[in-house]
View 1 (cartoon, one colour):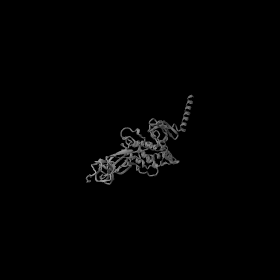
View 2: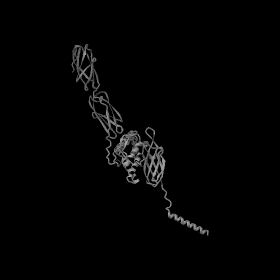
View 3: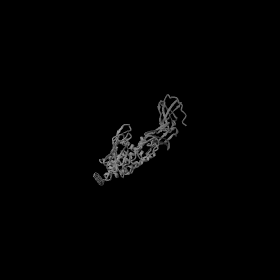
View 4: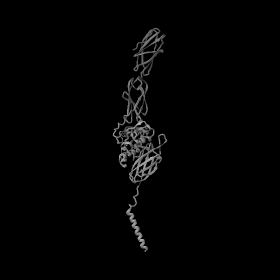
Length: 472
């Protein structure tokens, strides 16, 4: 009897279990665990930032960046588009001070269980803002992200979300190629340079870019409240393209010579080519407005006045102001022949040894050119006279109270002044004269100075009754 009851219980239990299996789907499939690794960079690596991974259901995971701005966080989600938000933290500026960072975002295209590497920068902040605009136009989250990422990639030449920036501080010894990571690092540095030149706060530039692209999906200087400004700079498609390209070259020009991101280093040609494509981008991010040609900016060349006539060693000096802050090659030529070349970022001076040149009028040309091809020039002339004046006496004529002494002079630059016994010479073309009071000094000393600064003295033994031999 007990056996029968036990069997019946077991049978009912089996039926009950069977009923449960028929009425429920059974245990769910575990969500595979993946991870997201990232690098948070503003004007420098952001340390101590709070990082949150967001899915459709809210916060999926959270962590903080380490001292180098990196983080890794485990994620379990079936969502294919995730947002990663980094807030707070700080980065070091050029003055060695810690600057508080704002909020930076990026979007991740995520495959469940995968490991994704992302960058979170001011650029990705703008990508997320563009994504929001495209979603507002009816695109799905994945499609909106893909479109936003594409238009920025078209402009930058690298994917700003998946490319890991390589900053100047990250570049090791030895020659580095101009990789996508190095280009990213230069763009971030250029964004900082551009922002500081106009408003002094990088975060402001970050917020303005996001507000710009969030309004109409374009970087064109138009936001929800109208025209956008970066400090005193009115933003436009060309302001972004040309302004950041200029800043890119300024950053490269200030890098240590020989380093990977220096214009004088192994990547100089590649950097210039990249700056040109950056400035002349036709990415849909800028609408249909055609970009201006890269370069053609005003390189200012100022020359100090050259002397009309000179002798000995003369210094030709001036200054240059380059639109990019680049080193400028300045060359001086005499009569079309190269004389000397210097490289400078401001003033320059050429010491010209005129003794190696003929006594004559010479053409002087100065040209200045930067690494981007922008140029300026100066054309002038300068007389060289290293020979002192030559003179002779032709007239010795007694007059009341003295003697009129006159003669001729020869000099390529021209005699401009002279004296005899304290009395000034009257100078006319090729002729000089002076009234010498009696008693007549003997010898009579006549001094002459020409336009080039050469001086010469002549001595004649004169008396009240004698007259020197005439000029030949």
